[in-house]
Image (cartoon, rainbow, N blue to C red; front, top):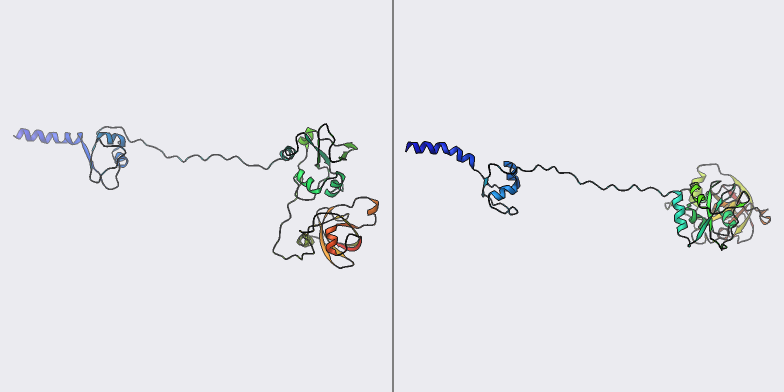
Length: 309
């Protein structure tokens, strides 16, 4: 009897080493228990003959294998963010190609090189087009131009006569729309769009450029000139109060204050260009749009005025 007891006592540690068990506590899973004993959760489920995807019960007793597949050590890595392409502003050449692509099939752009003292008004008259077209074709936001700047002034169909008369000349030679000219064109100098300043009330008859003139006047000394004003026809200014003028003394893009000598009314106009050298303009100091003349109360006939700039 004593021998049997002694054998049982000696065999008990071996049995303990051969089989380990674990009683499931609250919130424990195959994964957490597997990490505790360094056993893969799937191997733990197979060893205990239970479904791998089924949860454990509180107080359930699991047998722990003495040797099984170890718990894999995984390292969580953050997913790589896709690299977004860097957006860059379109180049001058890309803008030209986009403009040309929108024209009728076979149309070829005609270029003109800006000469000294030339502005958008004079160039538009020279090519029998509008200022708005030249701005659109060349992606211009203002009226300022740079001497030597290449502008698209129209389009003509190949092997046919263009609908718009082209009178562009450079060194007394017609400017043609060769493909290499697009590649060699200089970037167009642009001006920032005029900011809208709604905080201050503008009198309806003075025009859209009233606040711009006040901003300009704070930066330099005001000069004055008296003379005779003529008029030219324009669709602008009748509803939006954007008055324009031709004036030799102030640079294109600047704002001038014009006061009628007869009515004493005042408007503010933006200088588009110099006055064309024509006999009918010899006695004129300034030429304003017919909308500006109407706001001054002088109609479309020549009238005396004072100019500040």
